[in-house]
Image (cartoon, rainbow, N blue to C red; front, side, top):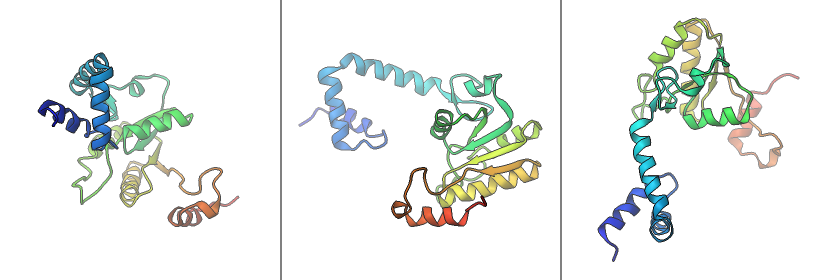
Length: 197
């Protein structure tokens, strides 16, 4: 029988994505048996992060300051605005592309089932940013899900109202992919959005 405190530690570790009961138990035992100092540092950092990290007032990315590093940078192209669903998407674009414009982070997508409407996604702040007149292109980088497509459609409407060109990330067959291994939905999307050469 485990101690109540150990049970609580294991249960609390399960809040992390992909961590089930066995993984949480292994993590707890690893920290207790081999790395108590690391566990204490982790606890301290978690407490500081939960208290000290908020949202950028301009783009809603995670930040310890009123403006995140991207919004504070003078080297960004303020005429381009890439709208993403999450900070993880922002990070992926920064790491994989040469994109040097600004971002806006929705922290989700429109979903009536989940109670996420325009207000929860910060659309009022997005429109206020667009009212500044600097943005010429809105790059819509929502995921290729039903909710992501609905969100993209909504964002395109906002861009039109502000006289801004809206573009959408391409979806379809991955580079190096073979058609026989591509799922039916992806292949249908790629076929339907084909381009002239």
